[in-house]
Image (cartoon, rainbow over all chains, first blue to last red; front, top):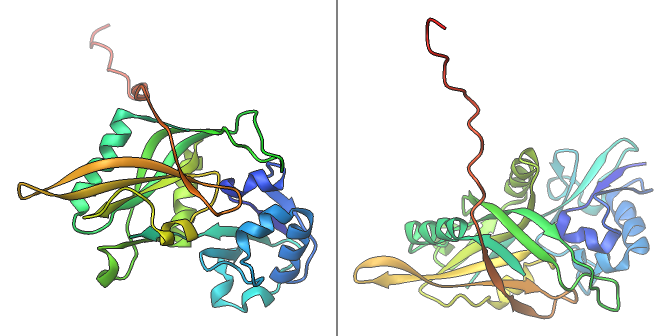
Length: 91
Length: 174
């Protein structure tokens, strides 16, 4: 199963785990499996319409899914899938 | 609560002044103690984030927006995370400056934040012709993402200097 990497700020919503194995043939299925188990984590990475928040990125290996097929990006069983925030702010 | 040394706070102020009139940004590296008190959903509400050192990061906002925006791209986040882990530290938050504004977070700041991290904001403005940092506050996003509340800052001793890794040579002839 693909291994999902959780940034430290989101670990309190996933029983403090840094890595979680999830089922899923693509990123959407993997994240659905994750957020079904940990709905509080889902509220942090998805907005009210169910879309990934703009500053939340997902990498499969070293590739950002924004430059691949988005949530439909395929995931192989031995892939590492990382949730990676972009940090932004200002006035 | 955020615990941070005077030297780390000074690093942030120096960088805010050097970057003026543009926003500076960076990561806070250290350790998180989640504490023992949780809300009704089981989430920590008395965590202590202890900053050991700061890590300056290049602001990747569009040039025209550098005066009022900062952006740390995901690749920069990954590099900062690797740098932290190489030192057996974690990212415990981020800092940025508000040139010619207050140290209070904007709505844009809140929308782009995550709970469980500290967000330091330092105000900076020109004074007698030179940039001078002003108020500095730390903010924490609530678990429901609705409230960006100020958190107390506790001053701690600067970490001790690391042991020298190169020993002095033995006197010749011994």
